[in-house]
Image (cartoon, rainbow, N blue to C red; front, side):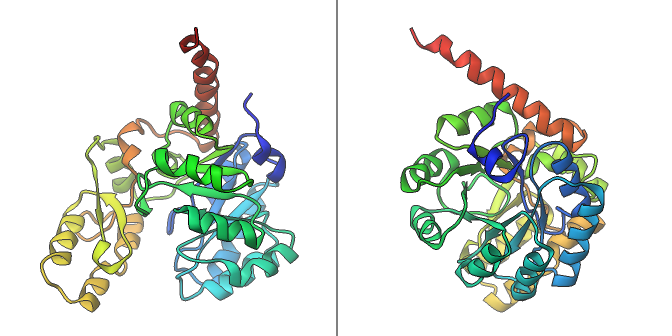
Length: 314
């Protein structure tokens, strides 16, 4: 079985994180992944601290295994979410969309391991100096907010820039992706899109079917003009947003156009007005299955790939 430093650091069986997907990664999904041996992560997104606290307690009622919370640092509720995570003493906090320095000491004092998502070497060095426990190097193949660098390019550079354990993210959905990540120097992986197909994932059936029926050219990136690029499925909403983005719509109206679009996709399955976040690997997600089965399956595949890699060496 594949084990790495990240397993020992957090106390998990498999070096697999479930991505913190806003409006999607709730306490039920996180608990299912943790029970399966990975690290389940509750997504705060733009939700208030009360919601996050409720989801942490729900997850705790379903599992005794390690749990994480993802804090979206641009959220208007970031302060109260950060406080809730500290008070509830979750095992891990992952962060995105900003610099977590404001909360680092509070989290570390609570015994929480802080693992920021990074999209550049510069941010990697910064959070290393701040005392992060590990980093998640997320390439632009991922769903949701994305950076410029791809996983193949980003991960080895991040590994070279820090002595911390590195978790690879973006474009990983099966054992081949896991094995490739380890070859690039990572000690674990984070998957988001693959877990959209989990039985415990509560997204609307329309959303789940869109993922299961996706093809290789199913996603597009919007939001670059506003400085917050997002990868999602090619839907009528995504195309309309893209046209508005480059059709001269004022910034304020463009921001308003996107408000609530993810919630409409997740909760209502609104194909016309919803934003269906997805990574480029959606076409590799073929079936609905329990979260624990997903974790075990990808790691068993990865082990076979790594064991077979020696055939190339003569």
